[in-house]
Length: 330
Ligand code: PLP
Ligand code: COI
Image (cartoon, rainbow, N blue to C red):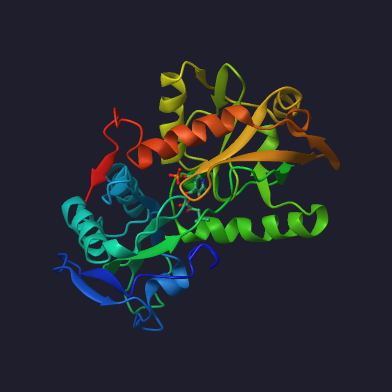
């Protein structure tokens, strides 16, 4: 399992529900390798789609712990509303996730593996004429992939700090929609070719925001620092969790804007790490900025990032007490 590329292996089935323009259908199970779609489907032309990414972990007692399911569902509802897609019913979507997980519970891998849960909503109106109008019909489905680590805790990633470009349209950054990822793809790929970087920290006009698939946290022995939420970047649920965990562990937690120059100054003595459901909290080792490579924290081990990552992982697996009420156990 751990050897397969992240997100390429799936439970045999997905759960699905359709919106017919007026109401949601009952949920059904279907095969996970086949999705019949009209070639004119709205999503295929005008990107009327949003998705979520959450994880379920196996606890020592064999139970499966889903992490912050209600918060992920809420964010999906917000994304759907922003795209004028039919908003999924929270109770139905939660059951679509839990019923699928229950059926395939035996396939949830042990830590550091997990089940990566991908609820997806797509516009299905068979109309290529509706370029400037929302879809009225939609399909909601839940796909689950048993996964290993996306980035290991020991990875020392090389990233580009890009002050010239932005990841996506600024009014749409907080929406978890496929188009935002498409918009960043070329920039990340060009950075890889030019600088051999794995990720790009987007900092348009020097404002440090996020990478293509994770939020950006500055961490020291005493402090956790990150940008306050706005419409321009994704309100990461891992980010929010780590802010709360850090405060609990006695770090001073500060949300304020951070300039690119300040980030470069910070890494002389501090850590930088990328937070996300897939990434968890992945330390950055080198930052390329204005054609120069800067080593983070003199190449020292990212001890604070690792400590926060472990504490979060321990809550997720039911080792550390769930004082925040983040776990749904099945
Ligand atoms: N930013 C982007 C662009 C992402 O794709 C993700 C991953 O989901 C995140 C941030 C982190 O969000 P979360 O912690 O909710 O997974
Ligand atoms: C997530 O962390 O859920 C993401 O969306 C990132 C993706 C690259 C798997």
